[in-house]
Length: 443
Image (tube, rainbow, N blue to C red; front, side):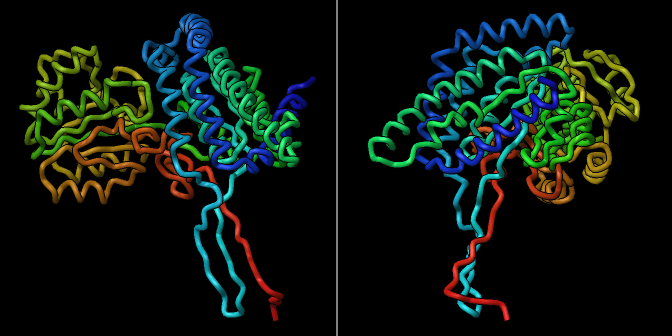
């Protein structure tokens, strides 16, 4: 079978499965999700063994320490995946909501109803927990999903999907028996189109598979790429189906002249060091000139404990002489860079306006934060920074579906049309208009 034939079969199966998934009730979907969560925990040892093989492969590939951390699965992370599924099950069903309702002068009743999108392709790197997050969100919103992770995580992704579909299959079989006992038509459940084809992992690491898959506009409705800028740009350029994206996460924390400096320390350390390889980690620290000599030496020592390297402007280097962290001059390109590592840009700015201007010029419209006790400056920052998520006295690491109470997330969008910020269940629905009349015609 050629690659084109393989991807066409995958997409055709997903399209058929999406129609079957759309028939499931809220209760049935929730029962499946809860069974999937239990199954992940029950199979944690097998999942960790598969992940260990991926970790060995990734180490041989020369992935950085931060990227290896993204790939690693342990008991805590498996439990977190299961918790995410249970949280998604507990969320309101986004399908079938009446979004708008109106009655025209001729008596025609119109309703705008939320519906599944259909078939969603998720393309991502390293983090195998995305497999569970994406599959659960698509499933709850009635969408079939095709998952394409990085080659370094293939074993992990396959076993997670296999465990989830196995658990869903068992629950689905109970639905079929129940329907059969009632004499109802259970053919959709018994046909095998779901769940095997409702959650699929692309079985090949061939990069051409993505191009083939994203050319199938008759089957695939949406693509959400998650990963580095190179991956996302490549996907957006080759795709013939709509793409929701963020190219990179160049996130900032601005420490204002009126900041609580102890609070600022903790926010900066969390935003940079808690998980440096994720897209909502801080890449640039901006410090007001008025407090630079007091704050920079302190944060330099704290960051040095985490072995963070600094790329700094002249103002910062003038203060940090000598620096505890490894320190070198920042180039103009550095300000645009998402490092995904223990590297941080630092710049001294003259007030909130220069901070805002820097962020809007060099940032990626992802997540940015101001630390200050000054309400006027905070409101100005929140209003004028043009990003998907803007914070006052909080870490940029909160830009996450779980942290936003979405249970999990399908991705983060910095687009301005459609979804923006963390994408949860509601962002995975479309809508249709339903007209209810009693013989009305257009005259």
